[in-house]
Amino acid sequence: MDLKDFCFPVSQRAVAVDDFSGNLVDWGNENTYLTNGYKSIVRDDTNKVISIVKDSYRIIRNKTLINELLQFLAASGENFRIDDSHSFVQSNRMRLMVTFPNLTLQDSESDINLSLFLHNSYDMSEGVRFYFGAIRAVCTNGMVFGDILGRYYSKHTSGFSLEDFAEKLDEAKAHFPAIQRRIDTLEHVPANGELVEGVADKISKRLADQILAEMDVNRISQWQLLNRVTNYISHEVDKPHRARHQRSVSQLFGL
Image (cartoon, rainbow, N blue to C red; front, side):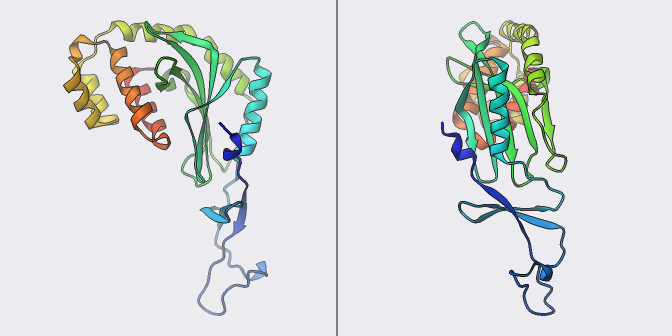
């Protein structure tokens, strides 16, 4: 996976407004620009406008975030790999997944590697955030541990720093016993119709109907149901839309 794709150049440029009372603004003279409280974020390698944002918006470049993250990862001493299975980049936003192959949980069929998700946007659709999750080795199903581990979020108007990343990683490792106990519980507790209704309400009614058609819900565990849902999200939902569904699964199954 080439991280250069995430690190395209962006710049902030003035937005001019025509007051319809005289000549159009002179682009060579900033004194002719009308104050409007907005600016544009432009992708420099294509010269295309990504978004129009308020002047209070502070641009946080993907390149800056990724370089800072890689420095902290290298200093952590943990083995890691950039994982493309749930990563994506668009002009307006990105999601980068990092997997830790030596930080593992288990279910009865597979190792489950701890993963980190880093998000950023250039259009105010979301702030900068990172949170922890996992990926099953047997099927690349991705999941989020939002309820147990929480997440870090920062608005673009307040700036951002990954200085507490090492502390957050240590906290995630310290919570491994609690996460493992939760997985063990889900493997032994039967699923039920209420959970399937939750899938229909929060993720996909079509998926819920498929589950009811394919499985006797009362004869499978909640963990089996969760894996059916995460398999759908990981393999049938486009990457830019997965995070929202993965957070819903985290809430629904208490992970």
